[in-house]
Length: 156
Image 1 (cartoon, rainbow, N blue to C red):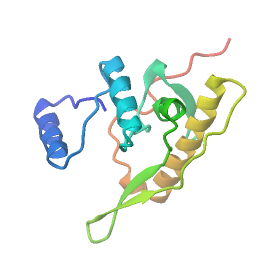
Image 2: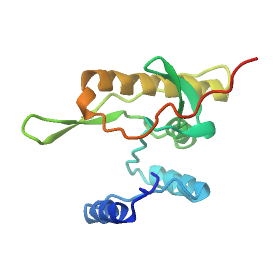
Image 3: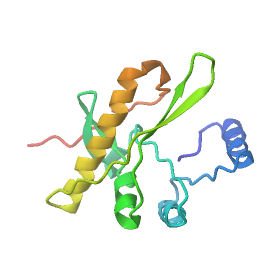
């Protein structure tokens, strides 16, 4: 994850995660992020990677609500490198103000003609699952940034 811009808020959430034993892996520096994530997966730890965030030019562009969106490739790349299971997960607030955590069945990777195509196919599949949950529970999608900020290069 990326640290929040407001240091006070970041410190609060970091300490709360620590108190509950949730390790934080920051996205920068990138090398450290990749190493820590791979280490965690190889230690059979759960790693949650939100992919409904704008990922700029480093991601892959997939359809999200009918618009191309720059999306992180990490979940698929890490699954390829470590044989970790890809299990989509969602948190949905209940009428009694408790939360229900929903784990979808493992998403088995579909192979494309190239490594790049394999990543794109599977990130699209994950994104389709996220979109289906947002459509089912639109009030649960807390999102305060410009998801479609990055645009694919125009084809000439």
